[in-house]
Image (cartoon, rainbow, N blue to C red):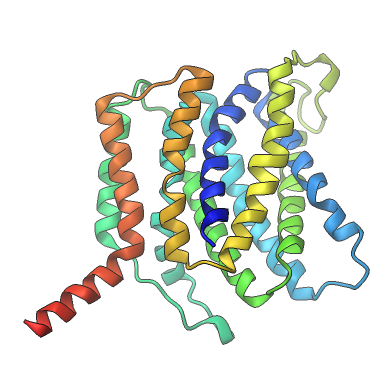
Length: 307
């Protein structure tokens, strides 16, 4: 049952370098819009061919999840303009740490409101130390792109919380929820590209796609990131949320930065210094501890009672 999660981690790992390669040939907003339109179209048959109407709650939860992950995807695209793909991937992994904090701020209600994870302050401290080492030891000077990279963790963290609840509230509607999410993301990206004056066409104008300096690699990256690292990974993530525990899923997803580093090294020639690798290891440790700390502490308390 953990296979979909492992696949998502590996697929996500290839995403950062692919997006960075794509953005070398076109404006950020244009690249994001094209990517998410491809993703939305890939899953559109799920809604178009459906005969029976969907429950209203499926549309609502799908739209909320789409708005959450839009924040993650858009800030990720912006961060990759000025920061390395490897560093952005490690910053994205912090979503696993912030999830318990969001669950505390937005407790569940109704029949699915019994589960609640407490935030781990040790994980927060490890994460802060890891980010610090990643910044001071990186091959690139810390910049505003790193701040955008931190925001992607917020967006994806919120998306994870609401996706988990949507899967529990609407079993059997995984593909439909995924399709609605990506439609919302595509609409948000199109709106941003239309309003982005740096796109080369001015505000309130769509860029002239024919005039962009396309490369074969960039076009392939648009199709790959849209259909595979976005559409496929969102579906697999939502399928996994209905089958595996949140703790297992989060731990398995924490391997994603290592896939990203390997793929970035192969495709872009990026590398990480000793300090950066140590910082990345601290971030992964924070991710793992944020999910297993309750079990470990419960085990230690039980052992103390027995002794």
